[in-house]
Every structure is written in C-alpha cells, then in structure tokens.
Length: 102
Image (cartoon, rainbow, N blue to C red; front, side, top):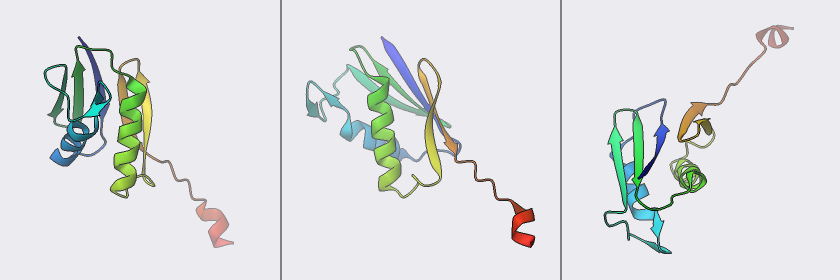
C-alpha cells in the first residue's frame, strides 16, 4: 500500500476530500474507489492511501483543478516537498516599495 499527502497552508475543508472521492478514477471510472483507494483528512493534511498503483502527478492534477474551481489558483501553488508529499504554498509576491515611492 502506498500513500500520498497533500499539505495545505490553511485547513482544507471537507469539500476537498469529497471532491477527491468523487473525482479519482479507478479502472477508468469515477466513484469506483472501493477499498483500493482511501482519502483521509487529518488537520492540515489530506492523505490518499492506495493498494493499487496511484500516480502522484494525478493527485497534483486534481488538486490544481480543485484550486481553479474554488478561485484559489491565483494564490496557491502545488509543490513537491519529497517523493510522496505535495505542499500547497502561497505564491511569493515581492513588491518593491522603494520603486513605488519614487
């Protein structure tokens, strides 16, 4: 069994876990998770545990799609922190205050 984590900078709502449950395809069909794939929410983490091969990139794709749908894509990005974990980080927006004053 393998696991993939998505770590959020803010507490993800239950709707993201529900979104993953509805959208993850197993055998080419959505809503076909059975006991092969389990989505768990623990504080600031969403864990996807799988007994079958599960692509980390597929989780990234679904996460980005969810962020776009909930209008968070402009503020958060998905970054791989290690081999089995993604983190959602805020974009670094550096504004030069000195240039604005001139």
